[in-house]
Image (cartoon, rainbow, N blue to C red; front, side):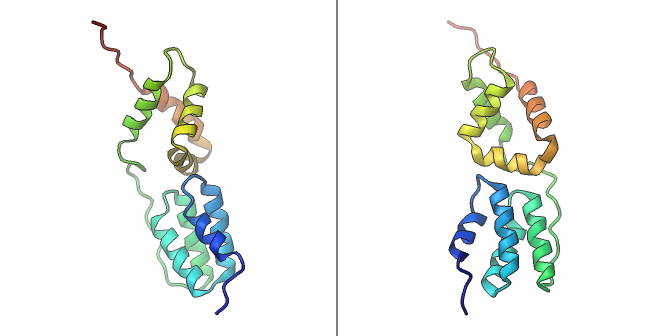
Length: 145
């Protein structure tokens, strides 16, 4: 069985945690191949991707290929355990009086995996969600001794 000429690239792309759009494109390409290896990869992506849109796309490709699969339920819990602590740590690392844009850029630089996952999950509401989250993070300063 001959694999598509870009199978290795597609396998790398579906595992790239910092770019949900690239994973989505890889799902589309894997769906065109339709061989056993592609179906196995799509099945794993459908079950495990951190961005639900990517899971849905893998599900639809598998259905188009005639696979008997069930769409996983969208997880209503936290996408990442302890996300509030991570975001608070980033906020605390910025100078007092920083802007939301400063926070957003630092998050993107420090944790592109988190940024990408939440951007993919929240879609058009990402910026308002992140800004509201940033505004609600309380940074307690301890008195200096």
